[in-house]
Length: 446
Image 1: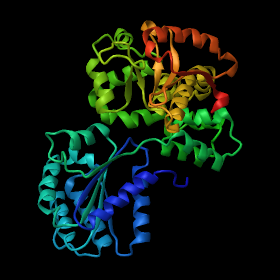
Image 2: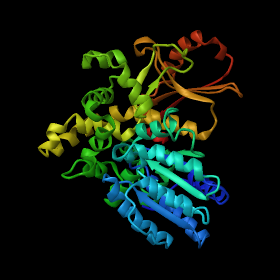
Image 3: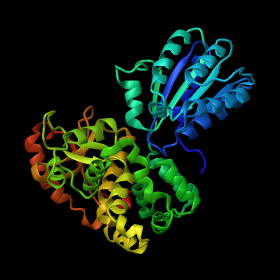
Image 4: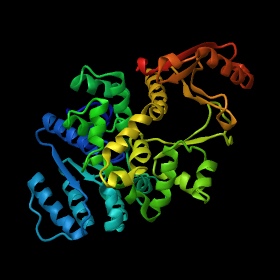
């Protein structure tokens, strides 16, 4: 797959690099696994080499090894890339890092440390040692230091917890996100120009714009709904264990509780009370960590709801993970005995209902990237009554859009939408005199 998007991130990295020619700069790149952090770094290094023949670039990947073995590997990479000779054996990363900081007093060095959070398990004292060395050398050195990490909770703890040694040291933080819907369309236009509306929605539902998943489908030339399903549900498919591979290490020994919560959410149990009735225990702490530490779910309230409103729902933010819990985790017994046709029939049966919420999410994203609105959300009342799929407002121009979203265009009924809006305007009379637009969005409109 060719390189898509990331122009803003590459621009940020280049600006930081230029500043590092005068004094050291530290950058953090965060994002879920498979989001393309390493490819972004490699693209950046290619651009650096094209623009600067004397550029010194080092990429170090922190694998699950003893620190001494890592240092042996890193020493070889450093000597080859910087054309230097390291005398003696360096057994700890702090000494190696100090060596590089010393070198960067006389030459600019870009040092990338990927999966940096692994030091949390290898040797947690590395963080305070790096902080000490950085503080002593950074003003005199010309180090362009880039930390990458994919375990969101640990990276957040390392750099955003005020009690941690590296708190406040970074000059720039880049959070890498999924490709947006325009990039998905571009990919389909490049590789499958005759794609259908359902193909686009399916790609959005199955990948959420995660580059690695897109790449896997492209490798298999699977860019229509049926072929995508066939790639997901087959023996030795990458996708079948992906949810476990991504999350078990994050969640640790309590992964069973977290998986149960996420499984219920993927099956439309979106209120805390509903989930607790199934789990049989209080889950407030788990929900808080899933939202704030792991960045996997989102708490959503109706537009204009008060800060303390208890009217709220929880959703899995990541499209693929929601699909994984709904159809792979739920039917793992059938998958373990390789009855893939059984699960594919269930997906086929439920796809329109399941994807309906993602069609709504798709159009919210479409409105968001149009930059025409100051706030976009949904509206509902107690017990999910009087639900309006999309409300978007432009406060400056006093415009308000209300939309109903259906897979099938024939099921859109604007009169029903207008009747629902009457309750909304009773509650929020300040919008009555605004320019109101009622519309419907369906699969035909994507």
